[in-house]
Every structure is written in structure tokens, then in C-alpha cells.
Image 1: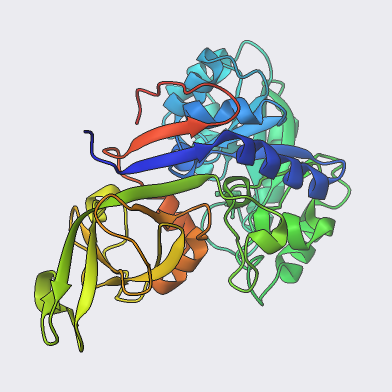
Image 2: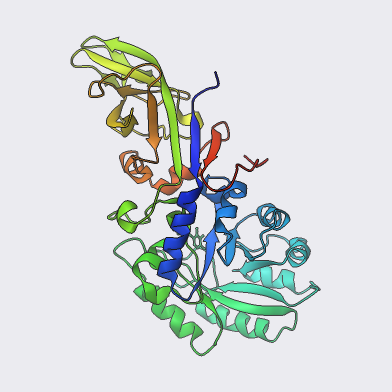
Length: 366
Ligand SMILES: *Cc1c(COP(=O)(O)O)cnc(C)c1O
């Protein structure tokens, strides 16, 4: 028997979540964000659910080229643009759209001879202070690009630092509007959080990521309340069982000690599968569909669960670590992180099965 640890990808949930995004987007086009190998889900198996999206955004040139080779005909955006001048020729050949965020990229462009005017996204740093030009430089570069016959359509872009929390988007949005006023160019601003809560940020293109995978971008609202369905269900089985006497401990470091006789299930899943090692005793987990808790320290290949409340559970019982019936965000909160990180961290050794929709596509990258 193969190891029972498996990530099931629900193709129909992907399609559903994209439809939710489109509904919120109104007339804006959807640029589905598929960086980090589609947030750990495998871009090659995910993108067929996004055929209805106008575009897909990734980071790596290789991922973008593969989308083209596999037949995606929409817009393909490189969220960090190019890293060296040699990449521009490939961007041109495969009809990709780079984000320009730094003066060095503008310098690299000076020597290029694209086949056709190169469409670009020009990024304003409106306050997040990661990537992008500050307003004064942005204006100069925009003028320069607009006058350059080798440059095609210019889409103006910024990224919000607080769309998911109390800080909101007002300050950044106001600055973006001031800097880009009267340009008449298409704009893209909204991530999932802004798309869901601030229709006034939708612009011409929206950039949802986490919501397409059924995760909530908000700490105070769960994915179900947003009408989203979980896409990845990480599941396994109990492969060992122990009866603990009071005073006996579970796992490395004796991090959990039983205060009474207890039944412990040992699950074939650990941090080498992508389950967070920092998840403490009490992190929620489903055994035979019943919510219970982890016990002790998560080890590389195994973790312990409390079987006290789960009648009939034992070796062979099905365990859901997150996904259907147990939001990844609940596990993330218990482990002191966010659902994004858990999904992205799914380890290559975990078998992946696609259910519903299209047949499984073998992705050599996973
Ligand atoms: C990752 C990313 C997104 C998507 O963010 P979510 O919170 O996952 O919706 C959008 N825009 C940019 C520039 C990003 O890097």
C-alpha cells in the first residue's frame, strides 16, 4: 500500500471560486494569480480551471512559458518582471507582460528590439514600500515609456499593504489616483481582499490569488462566509495507535503529557509533508469527519491526535489535516500563521489527486 498522505485538488471548487471573483469584479477583467506554483496546488493542474480568466500572473519566466506551451492564450503577467536583459527576448517571443518596478529594468529595456510593441505593467509604490517607483520617478518613467515606440499598452499598477486589515486602502488609493489622474491608461490594484471588500478598487484588471483557492484573506471573516469553497484537502490516515497511562507523554520533547488514560492516534503526516511544525497541541484536525485536536510536537513524518472524542476511530481511520470540513485558515490560526503559507508549503513528496472537472495533468514541476 502507498503512504496514505494525499492532497486532493477539487477542480470544481476552483471553477466556483473564479466565478465568485468574477462576480465581484464587475466589468474588470480577472488576472488569476498563480504564483508559487498556484499557491502550492500545481499550476499545470490548476490553470485549466482558469480558462475563463482573462489572464494569469506568475513570477518565474519558466512558469509563464509553460503556460503558453500548454496552450493558455490569455494575458500572462510576470509579477516581478524580468531579472536580466536576456529574458526580454523570451518575454517578447512568448507574448508575456512584465511588471516594471525598478530603474534597472528600464535600463535593461534600452537595448531591446521587440518584434512588436511590448505591453508592460508599471508599478507605483503607493506606500507598501516593497516594489515600485515612488511618485516622482513613476511620472518620469511613465512619460519615457509612453514616448517609446517599442513599448505597447501600459497598465498602471499598485499593491495594497492593508486591504485585509483595519488599515484599509484609502491612503494608497488616494495617492495612486493623484499620481495617475488623467493618464487614461488601464489600471490594476485589487488583490483578493480589496476585490471582496472594496469594489471601488476594481479598475480594469483585478488580481485575486488566495480566494481562488478557497482561502480567506481576512482574519475576521472565514472563507465560507465569503462564498468560497476549499480547493486543497490534505488528508491521510491513522497508521498507529497508543493507549497512554496518566503521566505518559507523546512524541519528541514530551511536549504533551496525558493527565488521564488516553487513546492517541498516530497520523502519517508531518512537517516534511508541509504540515506546520509549530502547530501546538490543540490544533484542530478531523478524524472520520469528527473535529478533534493534535497532541504533542509535530515530527517529520508523523503527528499525534486525540481519539478520545472520536468513537470507533483507530488504525485506518481517515484524517483531514485541512480542506473540506476543516478550513485551512483555522489550522493556520492555531499554528500562528496564515492559510497562504500552509498551502504554499505543501511538500513535493505528497501525492496529488485532482477530483472533478478535468483529468489530472502530470506536472513535472511537482
Ligand atoms: C500575490 C499577489 C496578489 C494576490 O494576492 P492575494 O492576497 O492572494 O489575493 C496580487 N497582486 C500581487 C502583486 C501579488 O504579489
